[in-house]
Length: 450
Image (cartoon, rainbow, N blue to C red):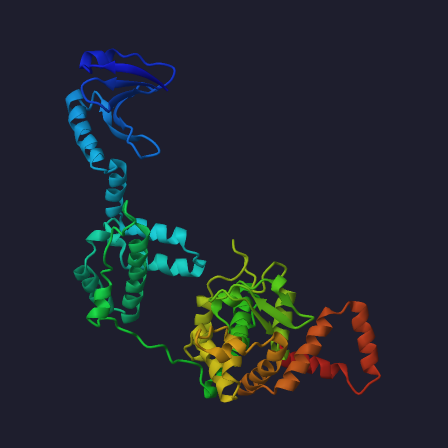
């Protein structure tokens, strides 16, 4: 950029200035610091360009384009800017602060997502809250969202769902807390001084909906478990996958996403262990595979040719939403349940069997409090968890009306037979013909399994 000597700006003079091959700058002789930049595109722009002692670079503030902005308007505006600079105020920083002060709720939410490491499941929940409960607030500057608005929206949402009302306000609380520390002025002070959701705590307006207490009770397990086999008896691969997923949830107590996105790469059927890498608390969990759980894994292995245990024909490669099949299970069994009910059923069964508290916490991958010193010294490997896992599994099978040993041995035998080549099957039949077993017995076992 070339810089010309000072000129006394007049309209005729500025209109006549030529467009050069590179940007050129002209200084006004009447107002020190007012310049006109002529860009290679032909635009002529008024700016204040001022070197200030103690700053690493000159301050440049755009005023506007000539001739839309007149010379007198530019000089008047330039004097205001130069006055602010003389008082130690950087107009550009002041403009950034003003823009931040008017930042909208939606922009805060987008900034929050970009700076936080959030799981896809968490983001889906947040998106639902933003879309369903505060869509009319998206364009509002957050500084205009007052305590009164917060209380009114919480009251309105509570009329239909107390839990969802609290959920919405928890997200807003997080966004306001984020804004308090994220958007600062030139003195590194927060632009926003308060979180309006705090009024809910001050006035004790939170609904504080208690944790659900539902689970599948012992007397219902047999009928519920039988419904899984009946619904699974179909040629539809998706239905089979969901039924196996529900059954595996019942026998492990794991969370929905922990199982659904389980890849075969994290399952070792030979060593009879599997690793849940993507957990809620971010801590990977290595678990043993019980006898019955092994039969489910083996059944899945025969029915899949992809990367995931619960394979599905979609862009993700695994089952994402099992609601429709779960609704079929509810209809077939007559027992309403949620996936988290199965987690509570597993935990309650373990507690009744007097499995240790720290063992249960490890099986469920629950974090212990930092002040729990004993928990810090309780380190349990997958092999050490094998015995309690088998005890819980056996009890659940008993409650399902299945004699676990006979059931497991039968399923294991049939699963092994299905993997044999035709030649090996012929050899097995020959061996069995010389023993007390008969093909009729095998067929009967297969019929029971089906």
